[in-house]
View 1 (tube, rainbow, N blue to C red):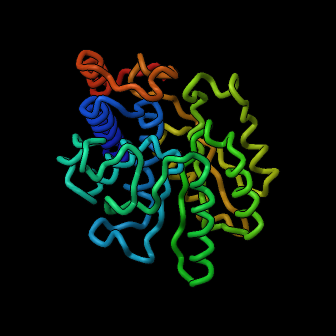
View 2 (cartoon, rainbow, N blue to C red):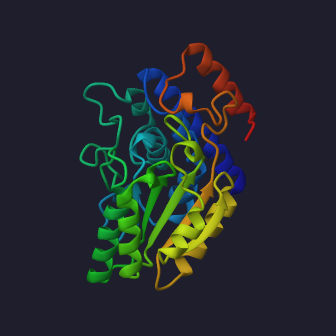
Length: 274
């Protein structure tokens, strides 16, 4: 399984790079940083079936950091929700693969996103609905570390703890870099673990690029009762492409043809500074 998921992660990174290049715009840094998280969720952890994307008992996933849509689109395509041949149409007029996810346009999306800070509130609503209707599905919400600078995240964190939403699992892509530079220099968010603990959450630190560790962490989260869980995933912005790693310039820039070729060579060869 480990080898299969590692190969899958290379495929997801290849998809991300090629579709952003084809579009001429997009967000490679934060898409590449969350690949292993999505691979673990969609190919091992979550109870989902691409043949019945509207199943009321399915687990839900919300990409609160909606600019990482290329990573989610690739995961959905490779999981079988739609034909991967659609991926190169990212951001093209009329394509369902919009720059940020639009749930009415594509099967498998549980939430539209783009405006940061809102995903955890939506996750809480879905989790409350499950509690009230007696359904057993779990709700997973991926946050960016720059995104948690927004106050609505902490209002939602208080709410999840207040209602004992043990069917909510948040994941923070803690890669330390946002649009304009390091998060520590713009608006420090650390210590995230102590902050979430103070808000009543069970906290699991994890290597965000170790699929086995991620799967184990998600299993641990399932066993927690009476409080929500957050995975603080230590990630590398632009993971897998050395000249993109930890570089805020690659937050929202498409690679040109030469850069794409170099990036794909590194992805296939497993070269990385992270």
